[in-house]
Length: 349
Ligand SMILES: NC(=O)c1ccc[n+]([C@@H]2O[C@H](COP(=O)([O-])OP(=O)(O)OC[C@H]3O[C@@H](n4cnc5c(N)ncnc54)[C@H](OP(=O)(O)O)[C@@H]3O)[C@@H](O)[C@H]2O)c1
Image: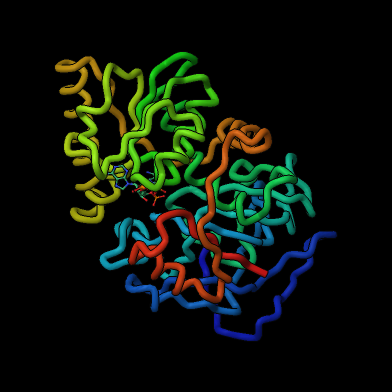
């Protein structure tokens, strides 16, 4: 298991040489020693970098984005605490954009010096808020040259979530009607663009400040949920509906984690499965609807499509504000207090 730690020492990195490759053994990282307010986050100078497994890639991080998951894991009582609490201290952060610093012996698709972007699994313990992040080969892909590290770091976690929901679970196809609830958020905005790029007819709900952006990104209708009754404004049937918000008849994505936190993994996971099965049965037999919860997961096919869409300008997630990693507490506070509506990115020099 990869695990951060070690005493605080000087800022400089320490190197271990493996064959012809030099591996960093310690580096700067933001550590979460306990759940709490942004003040609990500690920028440490001497956090261990684990040895690379055979398919691992060491990335010299240039930018990481702040996802809602980071804030929810950090806050009391700690989303996902049934998994994370025994593993504290954690390093938060899922997305990364940076440069390959070293590769494990069985890595074939990436080489030292390449510019890459990608995202870790939601349950990874050693996240990307670090000068050096460790991801598996399948979690990374070369970064398009025209996209900056800041812009690239905003994309993979949200876009992979949207891609898996639409392409992996709903299996959207050309000409279908797709409804995206929450098109103003990163996952929803990525979903609009992925569905539009797959020649679907997209309708979305979002706040008034996001409607123009949603329409420009390919939505045919953008309903402002703050002033309109979405049930009256949205007409007709849909082949797929992605709900990133959690309407009264559905749940927030990731309910299994909440139930595990409340009742423990042994009870929570079977309970979540039972609830899902019950809902699937109800929706199938009363409305003919297939109902699923979906999770972000590394997917090389998804990353390839996301990269291609980014390269030809069909997929981007706007970054509202960047902070240096030294201001990670301010960045989290801004997201906690909803001072910044869109994506926040942390830059690492
Ligand atoms: N299960 C997984 O693997 C996974 C992965 C990624 C994310 N998630 C979850 O998915 C959710 C969305 O993530 P995200 O990164 O897209 O979050 P985000 O970028 O913070 O998006 C939130 C946005 O949703 C919009 N919104 C709020 N209430 C709404 C409503 N009633 N109807 C329509 N839109 C509304 C708001 O934008 P506007 O007001 O501008 O429209 C808000 O800024 C979060 O709960 C996150 O934790 C789960």
